Length: 600
Ligand SMILES: Cc1cc2nc3c(=O)[nH]c(=O)nc-3n(C[C@H](O)[C@H](O)[C@H](O)COP(=O)(O)OP(=O)(O)OC[C@H]3O[C@@H](n4cnc5c(N)ncnc54)[C@H](O)[C@@H]3O)c2cc1C
Image (cartoon, rainbow, N blue to C red; front, side, top):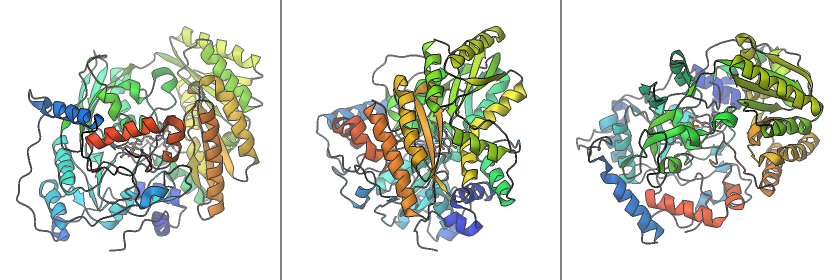
């Protein structure tokens, strides 16, 4: 077995492709997983039965909740003896410390005891693997450049909440770290396993448990992808309105096209699952529709999670609103696997719009484009999408798709409602655009034409990779109050345009949120440092405008270094106290979200 050292080029060495492409290709072409037969573990199976989990729907199911709340209260009062490090002074201190520019996340990997594997295997059977390739695959981000020195020691594939609970309790008993794993589309090193431990891959928990058409909600397991869910909902005239990322068939196409040195349109292959509902909850994600429907925070009615001590918490009823106590749903949403494993989610659904119009408009400057997005929001028009792409992003799309769009800053809109209402809104925005030097305003209503236009936007990142095939992307995610968006993008653009690196800008402009895709050569350390410099500048600019370092991608390991400046030490200490109360052994996704220098 090779030593458990992770390198960014693990999959590319095998395929001869650039790391990001190779990871995507590998993800598509590999067998779902390589499971070792249990006998290969050379471990005698334990006969010791595990404690039975409580059914959260049974009358006694809330037994854990008061215990958990009193624990929380004790912690807040300072009466808890926690083994969460009061200050993480360990070797991972460098990543996530204030202004750190370290890349590789260090960790303290302890050998997991054989008896531990044996106990897991006793109830997971084949759904556990210690195969090196599988562990390495799960320890390597599929969509980002982040790295850790270690990979998980074990990967497990639970099929039920019962199994998740048993896994978590076993890990807690042995104090072994857990990294929950959804679609692996997160881009801040969220799924790295710097301390080794157990990766819980949720892909076998993808049941749609119940659909309540009349209540417009659905209960799902966390491994369901949002794209699959929407395919299921379509015949019922409903949809789930968050759309973070398409599945992974697109990069395959780009890689193949690139191999022939000619870039043509992407095929219409059905997309893979992309992000999962569990991962989307855990990152508090959003997407292009958030301007109309809000983020994950607004679209989850309740959820169930297994806490580190094995308690199963149901955070609320199925009622659309509730004033019953602390909002545990929102505590878990955005917790990035650091507080518990989400095992069931009830989602709010929307009616599929009867009609929609997609429009596009060109501008001389990104400031003009951003000003139109702001003016549109001020006008009270309820756009369902307003996305800004700069001229570099449009050039990438032209290259990747063989299109000939004008290479200038561009806004894309979607309007929904009745036919007359959607058209009325379109014409109003056309007028606003004209007042801000907009030109070539076009709009389409025919379904194929609309899909074609949105495909351009959805494939933007993959198109960016096509510009620099051997490069990785550092993706920024700042979000500012709406009135500051134009200024924030303009200032950033000046710096980006002066940089030797290729940088593409794409914005969820109606929310004041924009991404820069900074392409850098991973073999050139000075390029990564330049990318870091640009990233730092944009984050600090956004923070100076009362904005945030991350509008939707989350913290992972990559954004921890900015949290003290954004939130202040008191907020971070409060987060750490909550973490210590729920997870005294610090087993849940350790080394993520809360910066290592925060002390309680
Ligand atoms: C091309 C591209 C475009 C993107 N566009 C957007 C966008 O527009 N908007 C946006 O918000 N994001 C976007 N993202 C980021 C990403 O898609 C989201 O962060 C998404 O929510 C991650 O979901 P996932 O299932 O892939 O989670 P993963 O990457 O598997 O995990 C993310 C985090 O969630 C935790 N987790 C996963 N499952 C569970 C569970 N069941 N219980 C507890 N914790 C869990 C993990 O431990 C990890 O910390 C984009 C990413 C890419 C690559």
